[in-house]
Image 1 (cartoon, rainbow, N blue to C red):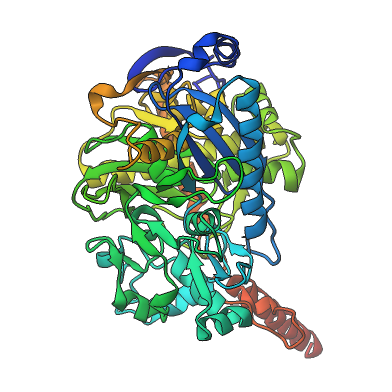
Image 2: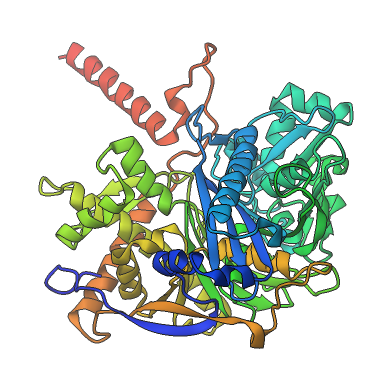
Length: 593
């Protein structure tokens, strides 16, 4: 956070050890690969990490949790209309195969025997919705990504029918507000608007799933006997799942008019679902499945009530373990299933603060505005000025998620002057991520009554050291980042390796390895000028958030030729009507002089 002089102090960190896994660097990786010790590695466990912007395949040593090799492929996103976000299911699947093949090649080059891979875990972008034909194996439409806003009018209609227009009408069963974020409304849109989907449902050929279900079905045989399943963490993000009974809820399915026969079977997060049926890993069990944020919670070893982590990916997701009982939030957070690590193990729950846009703002600045060429350039630009100079950026591209749950919000940049340049905007973008995290952390502290004393972090954006220091300064608590950042994939691998019938990974606390972490300490004095400025800027940020609210409030109105009317935006409609009245009035008055 800027100090009183408007500059950033050089960040510093203290290495700390916490339960987890051992630090690995590229140097030690290559040095150890050349040694004959590789023969004694023992069992390995792999993880498919299918995220919003990329797919990765990673292989870990089950005894030390050391990352041995990985490969990554970017995923294309398409934006067919304003607010729509889609991905190609076949491209997603192909990216998984490519990452598997390349990683196995790298392992072979390192003299590592891939036959030592004993299990595969799957972790995935949650809520993203797919429907496919079980007879042909073909997707019936593109995957509708969790960020997609096309269902806003559906959500507004559903909320208007609830007693008191209450968006939390289903929260007692689902832990979730009625929102464009979750799968049920996306699936409802597909049933209503895609003829192929509706026809496949009528002819009993349709299968619904989130990304995990699609991948597991394809990898275990597809149309030739593929396993149609999901796990409790992914199911809990659909609005069709009862988080108390841990199964699909007939009343919720009836509420959204979703046929239950198209839903996958709900399983635990750690059990053998099926075997790989093709490629160099044929016959290896897929035995772990967790939504990406739950996987990161496991990978960060947050197994105790009260432990929390924040992941900085496309969005930003703060999860706090609440133990064996679901805790309902009074401050805009979600109640979700954290994990269920075995068929006979109890489910654990979490409070979650979800922010739609974090790393996605970097991609927007790069691809849409062109003010940076690479992600690393953003940090250099922001550091060159050390302040946003009064500029505030609210990246509500997909509305606002926690704690507001306001789909009508849209992104704004305010506080601009002639002095403002792209460096200030870069700094404002990083601050926006930190301010959004503070909002959900404040809500979480209010719900729990026990403030967090430090924040464990992971995700791609944590490589930005300026961001991590800003975050510590804005929260006024230390931020702790593991040296091995792939905690999401690690969590999926842990669940897969610990599954009954695999049992090569022990999750007992005494068996967990140690992790080297970086700790970013707040660089401002709690009683000093820096704290005052921090609080002032946070208050201005919240003022900017209010300016972003209620921007788009109705479904676009067609004017008969596929175009939309300006009156689809109420503020613009009032402005135009008012302007016309003033012009007519002025003309009338001038004609009577």
